[in-house]
Image 1 (cartoon, helix red, strand yellow):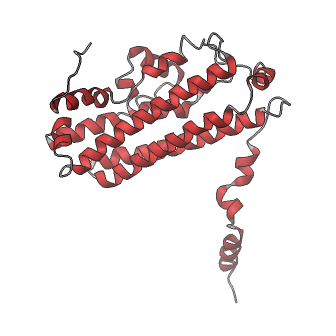
Image 2 (cartoon, rainbow, N blue to C red):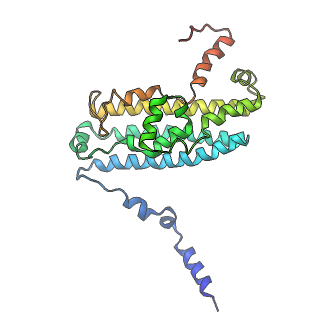
Image 3 (cartoon, rainbow, N blue to C red):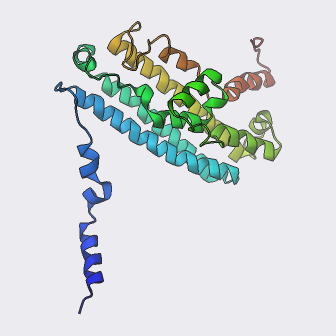
Length: 263
């Protein structure tokens, strides 16, 4: 005689299909338009997908920080390469969104009632976990704390912080590692991956700005209440690892190249 527990386990196994695993009923039912304009469907889809990628970046960043702190650089480097690829993919979403014409967006934009990408907590969490609060200045930190109290305190060990702590534990400089990159390959890859993530993020911001300029114009006020030039354009100066960009000058000079004096 089969026990009721065995029967329940069998039913659970039969019910665990593709739709159940991905919770598609919940996921797909969350796409709800607030207007009757057909192009709003694309607008919501793109932002839903980006939020899913942000969720995964947050998941992997938590793992990467712990791995670097434990000097598990091989796996940390692998996951950092993945984040760079996700950012590359995320950037391509802007070209998809640009298949919605500026005229189409203008026809329903006024009905979004203040909804703005600036309100994405996950996006800000990614920035905080990367270490932007350590490089962007007090105004950025104050704005983040005002919008999401406690978010900065949740992530005392940022990617930026553990990166430099790792180099300090090894007792080497960036120049040491790049000169001896094939024997200090794990640290070399760590630096290259951090640079690539930063570069991809900057590219994502730049193309986001181009998309916004295309859709609403450079002098327009965003749905979040800020003017393009007052906020969004200023974010292109944000970098997580300015040292890795400046270091390229040192590397060029070390190899005998000519470098202009710094600011």
